[in-house]
Length: 78
Image 1: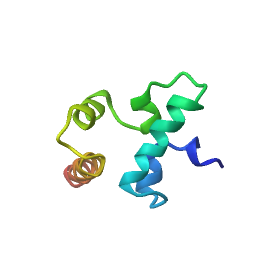
Image 2 (image 1 turned 90 degrees about the vertical axis):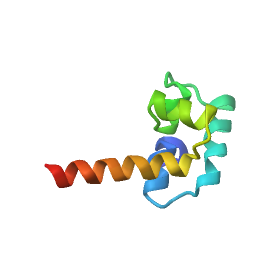
Image 3 (image 1 turned 120 degrees about the horizontal axis):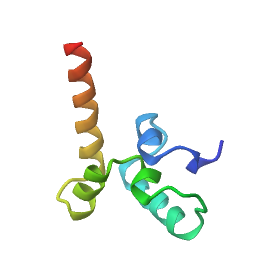
Image 4 (image 1 turned 45 degrees about the vertical axis):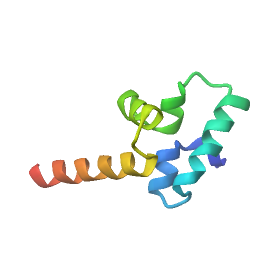
């Protein structure tokens, strides 16, 4: 499996990359990616998460951690 076959978020959650590695995914999308996915999809972010990251002050790590907390909360409630 090639590094970029996963979204950045999935690779991050799998412990394969660190927060700063997101720049590699962005560069790959700009320079080599030939698919149909938008950048936010390639990264594994929703449009809202992508906007929060780009326009920010939120870091990619903060966004992913918030998503994890939300999912854990939903599991507890179910």
